[in-house]
Image (tube, rainbow, N blue to C red; front, side, top):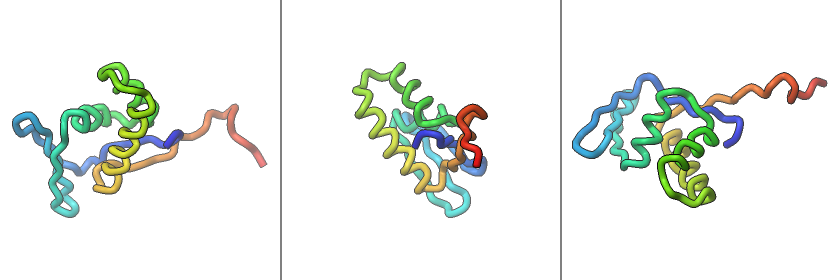
Length: 101
């Protein structure tokens, strides 16, 4: 999960309906309703971020055990990816950390 950047796909439509955020994957017509924490993570993903960046922001907002936060965030991000709502990219290693062969 580290070194991976999560980014919302640009072709996902969303709308606030009552207390819930609803997202529509236009490729397959699937519609998804998000609870409040999933909505917060979705909104954080307006800008591409790593899991550690998201985890730090969630820790600021919620009183949650760090291990539980990491596990539940990984599960949520995996679901977003599986549903086709979020794309993954690899973050380049800083020049000083690259191994040359």
